[in-house]
Image (cartoon, rainbow, N blue to C red; front, side, top):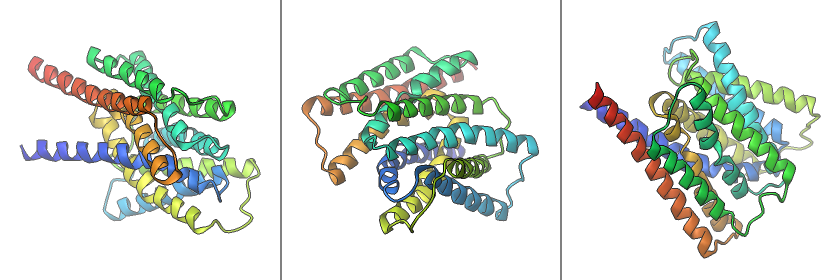
Amino acid sequence: MLSRDSNALKLVFSLFALYIIWGSTYFVIRIGVGSWPPLMMAGVRYSIAGVLLTTVLLLKGSDRPSLRQMINAGIIGILLLAVGNGLVTVAEHMHVPSGITAIIIATVPLFAVCFGCFWGLRATKLEWFGIVLGLLGIILLNTGGNLISNPIGALLIVVASISWAFGSIWSSRLNLPKGMMAGAVEMTVAGCVLLVASRLNGEKLDHLPDSAGLLAVGYLIVFGSIIAISAYMYLLTHARPALATSYAYVNPVVAVLLGMGFGGEHLNPVEWLALGVIVLAVVIVIVGKSFAAGARRHQA
């Protein structure tokens, strides 16, 4: 019973980290790119977070990953963080609004389910219903908006979503480092790749970022990277793909609310309805996961 309660607590904390913390990162990234070159900022974020987390884990006596595990984690880090988050950062630097960015990223669960089917990971009917309902809520949320105000930026975010979804599903099939070490290696490799890309792209830091930019990177390192990505790694190995990627439905809600509170944005009645639909979709996905797990236990 104690072990079950502990696992339930970890699941709840992981979902909170993804829903709330990751939902806030879109707004924080937008602040950061105001004084940082985008690829450089993402590279600094993940390099520092990866090195810090790796050092702490090694000092605590965590097992050193094998070469194969490090290579696998590096590949996943490139797909999820270097391509996935790197392109998001570039798009926000191109003035794609943080709320719109979060809405496009909400396509991740759809791509994840499609990729999961290739590996025999069939979603339940209830999960499919939740995913479809969530997508309808996203369409409602964008009623009266303009996703194509920056077509190149929007395309980058779509590519980021596809890369993130594919990497998330593929990671469950690979031999990765144990526990949080997987996220540590992924962040370190992704950070190095992003810094190389920044250099090749000719990015330069002409002056020290302002205090808001430095605080933004600090927040992204501690909360958006070390805490949230560790939580995501936990969910990928302890939950169904639909639940692990369900944060994409809640993140737009958080991003929009932050925009209202700090950016002077406003929602019309249809958009408020959309937020309710999206939250309902998340609940349905979670219930679908619970029903599926219960069915498997009864069959066993």
